[in-house]
Amino acid sequence: MKELICIVCPKGCHLKVDENLNVTGNGCIRGIKYGIDELTNPTRMVTSTVAIDNAHISRLPVATSNPIPKDKIMEVMEEINKVKVVAPIYVKDVIIHNVLDLGVDVVATRTLLKK
Image (cartoon, one colour):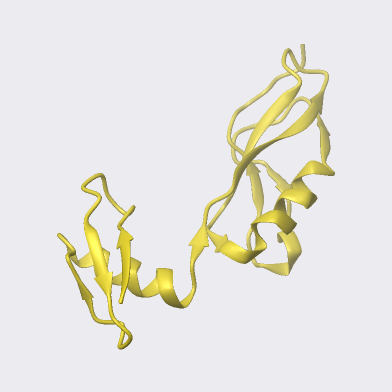
């Protein structure tokens, strides 16, 4: 039996998932999917920053366009840390296309214009 706290909504339900992937303790249907996914294929969104030139600040906030496998987070961060962009950059601009061939892009989460 594995115990988890669901992070799908603000309720933070205390889930229990047994060896047959039966989920209890969920307050909504989304908790069932979260409990099963967390044990079979945990994923996370990644948020970070990349270096940017010619903008009024030196870092551009970025995020993955979809969740990635939890065990790939550090590899994705290594790729993000290699990047340097030049302003202007707009919200949702793709900064890294198909990072690590995961089918997920790293996108800008803020517009930064030239200084």
